[in-house]
Image 1 (cartoon, helix red, strand yellow):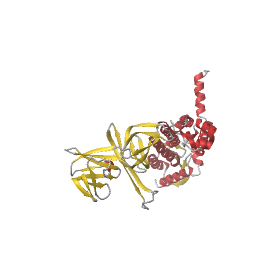
Image 2: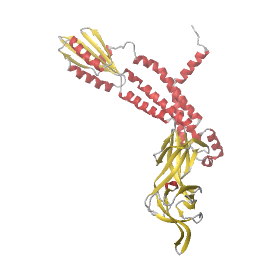
Image 3: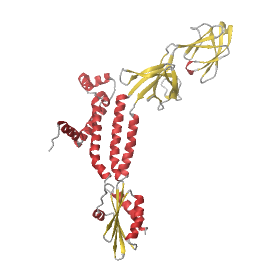
Image 4: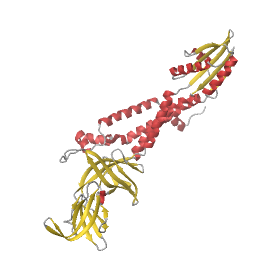
Amino acid sequence: MTKLSNSDGFTNTLWKFFTSVKLSVFILLSLAMTSIIGTLIPQNENPMLYLKKYGEFRFSLFKSLDLFDMYHSWWFRFLLCMLTVNIIVCSINRLTATWKIIFPKTPKFNINRFRKMKNRQEWTSTSTPETLKTAYETYLKKRFKTFLVEPAENGYRLFAEKGRWTRLGVYVVHLSIIFLIIGGLVGSIFGFDGYVNIPEHESISSIFLQNSKLKKELGFEIRCNDFNISFYDSDMRNRNRMPKEYRSDLSIIKNNKEVIKKEIIVNDPLRYAGINIFQSSYGQTKASGLKYEKQAKMGQSIDMPGNTGTLKIEDFKSHFPYRGITLDNVYICVFTPKEGEPEHILIPENSRFDAMRNGDFIISIENLGNHLKITFTETGLKYYTGLQVTKDPGVPIVYTGFIFLIIGCYITFFMFHKKICVELTTAGGKTNVMVSGISEKNRPGMLSVTRRVANQLKHLK
């Protein structure tokens, strides 16, 4: 008698440990209990709020246990990994026996069991057993995968079955759970969720992670080309007007090239390289004072920064009477806003401080001989767009899990193994026909199948 080595003994012990039902119950209860804790303790709040609510001692204890972000804690991930291994090992352990049932070398049928079924259908026929056997055999072979004929006293027994493979439905459900858990772990470990505020006409290449002061480099730039907001009709003097819609015109810039451009609104994000950029909020900030320089000639229209409109320099006057005074060296321009009617503005030459103010810019013009140099200087307040930037590489895996879950549930609940027996015996010059069916899990459904087969066979001669 051979003795197991220490390694074999340890492997068997470990295998039995992971096939234990008690382990499954313990892990599921642990996940349920910790999920309750995650509901009672708000997750990912400001640390100062936790300190004020729980006090210094409990704050330190809860923080050391990662209870403030428990769904990303090492122990919660460990429980999910244990559950995954438990499901895999249990499935493999039971699949061996199930496989032999699904793919037997020789299918076996017990005639006595069929005779005892309450769903059996019986009638008599004037045709001989041989004639009926030929007709029934053709019908059953077309509709069932496995078919077997046995000679019997005074007749024949015809056995047919299909759907043995439907026993695999529960394993498809197990596989879907594994995909869902792995997808969640991948997203938790390798994904991120951050935010950033970008003023109009500016770019960023990094974001701040949620509930953290850590910055994360994106590997590309997000540029806010323009920001637009509309409000519900109300008193224009009301500063607390409700926004109707706000949208951001964004560009993704990589290696100094624009690779994608899209105008986003709430629930319509920009997606790039597996990263989702959502419109989240907005606000106003003081202008940075940046200057934008453009060149133009007399009579030429140019686009103003931020897609705010166009500016056309129509004429130049060395002396121009204006409201009782005379202005020297004045450019007469036409400003056409993006939305609205054109308007004339006067811009004195080489004057920056006294230049005509328009929108968020101070405009100045300088004559360089062969062309005009127009400078736009940002001033006052301007909008910024608040973006939520997320990445979850586990999403495709989770979607795959949902697909397998739907398939597995459909197989498990709507498909089943069907066995049919047709017994033909002669008595008194006639043939007695019995049709009976067996199903291990769906007896009402098998009754319907048996009746349908019997009704079809009654019309065959």
